[in-house]
Image 1 (tube, rainbow, N blue to C red):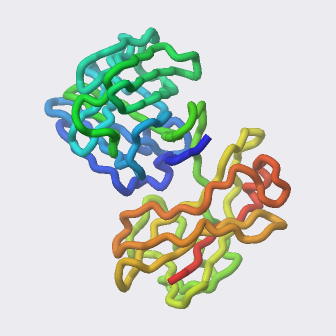
Image 2: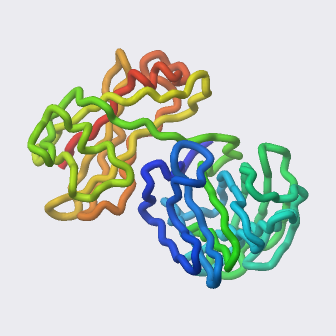
Length: 332
């Protein structure tokens, strides 16, 4: 299995997301409707007009397995999740309340599912999307066997891949999505994405915006980011901050992967680099590799994804997360 994208909306902003709002509804980040953690995305409007939320993919997608949670908040219209190249629709999943889902090529239904989609209920949606003249679309709901399969031309035009997901609704349609993941080899399966926040400074080599280097964790723990109101910064290569984390509260949950995430920019010119680091109790620092920065906070900065605790090569446990430290290192 090769995970290529994970997004739980927990930073309460999504670089690469665009929204369009009409009527009395709203699209974008929501801290009211979510499946896990504290945030999801919503797309919807009522009282007239259409609304959408676009998520830009980190890579071009040709043959992938997509997972997300879906929740129909209410109202009478439809929800449509489309895979697009730019603004060209290659295909989609049409969900109407109290009807079965429909797989589409372009905007034409080619196969219907069997599960009746109801309101105010979370569903786990999984899609296998293969864009080709002889392609395939497959749909699973709530972890059950595939309930709809279409084999045939899934490439309605010249585009061989999609680069964004378009969450679309017309007037009087309103829904939420959360817990996104994309794999390029196999079905992702169920998963919940949650956030653990800094609550103590262990190493403080970076300079805080408040001039106090002993409490740098207080400058990087707000969600969504407050831009340049509070921050830490460094000008010397290989300076770093390292932070303790709040208790994760995961109990006996199965933890399949961890990663650190930040919003970081270059204050001089685009091209500077940083690295996010993790450090398990009793172990060494693990760097996610150098990440090139832009001059604005419009990029997800991620550490390496770790599927196992590097100290004992065993699956992560809640106690491991509670003892974990994360931080950021200047690189160039």
